[in-house]
Length: 91
Image 1 (cartoon, rainbow, N blue to C red):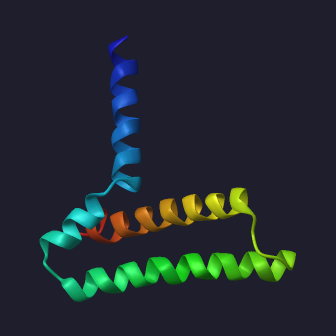
Image 2 (image 1 turned 90 degrees about the horizontal axis):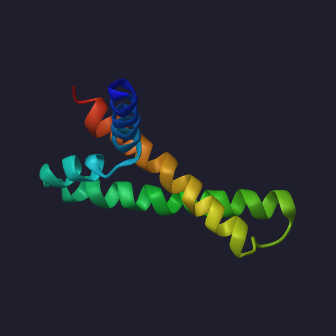
């Protein structure tokens, strides 16, 4: 029984490590304003690329459901990217 709770905690920690906000915390602790602006611009540019790709493939603007799906997918990918660079990469 104790092993199950440890494995659940390990999975939660892994998900938090990959998709949590630790990367933003590490970025903000460095007080690199230019880097913060660059990463936020990169997030918006990546989301815009997702919308452009959808429009190119389907020939119309995305409705609300695919738009929310793209935003959520890109956000999770971007969070994982930030955490790999600033949290896992700095060890």
